[in-house]
Image (cartoon, rainbow, N blue to C red; front, side, top):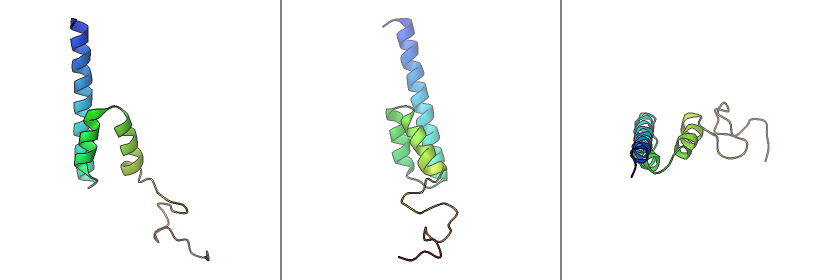
Length: 81
């Protein structure tokens, strides 16, 4: 291996370790499966960061008719059926 290949490998390892550490610590702070996010952060980059931001940090609402501001579990008042 050349010197630049070793440097590139070290840089990739450093990025993955930093990402994994941040995901684990932040997921623990938000009580959102920290081991899953930490281990997934060691595998690849940047997909875990993007999905973590969308799912955990933005509290992406799942399902139809739900929003973060409803306050009543996603059921809107005045709707029948």
